[in-house]
Length: 390
Image (tube, rainbow, N blue to C red):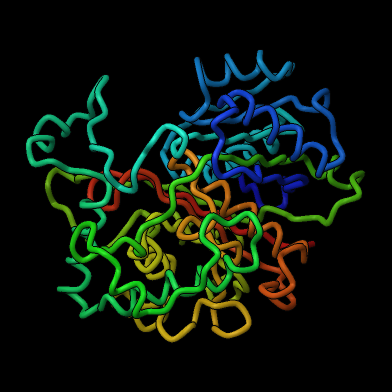
């Protein structure tokens, strides 16, 4: 069963805070839920499906359904890291198409900045029950940033990708973030600024890394008959794909991501090609994340992503492929290490024509949002959705 045209995104909301010392995770979830329902023109009583990931406190949907005062008949707490909330959009559409719910609420919240997290320093093993491979990896000191740096170094070795090319991704994000009043970093940077910033894990530098923020966001996905009654621009989900890339028994190729599989699945269901896409929201935990995903999604041949992103090609109004026009995780917002949700939010803004006028893509009728969760250098999830303005 295809989900093409079976569900619409009716409401979106992004929490304005980037530092939430006086808010609990539950409060942020509640505030973004209220915001997205107000945006859609719905109430909490309309919600009959709820979706969250590992950022939800307590027992996930059991705790949050009770806290939010929901009466639901369908829940989903699939957690695939940063790709979770892109995947949830697809899962919500599946649930709606199957008749399991009609109004699906998806909420994200995080407080990593208030809790003192530093960029990329979290060990890959965080205690609790380890993944099967972690006992063998942990003695070598894997962290988030050095696993991504390993992919960047391999990409440079295989294809001649340069630090300057990666830097253009941050430059583009900064050009967009200057117009976002809520962005954590609003200063426009140059290629020279990026390549001269301190090395965090060779070859990645400080400005190759995403920001750490508190905050969150929410999405409401509804059935077509609900969307028809709402006074909001209609954004239709026409394709979705998901994939897991693991260690493959040690046969690891660091030059590609799970987007190699989730992207083609989404494009096939949508019946469109990368050339048709007007705007892309790409998960940007690090600059190398963006470059590899653009290649794997089909926007550039493998190894030629550096040429695609260079010279302002990702800057709205200047380049051929505008991306992350809110500033993305590199400059604006990255709550709870699950930045995929914010990618969907900006894609919807673009399709509605509600992005900042300085970055709004002209005639934007087809957009893609993609999330990556876990680590490119180890195991990770990938999720892709393709959205259309009706």
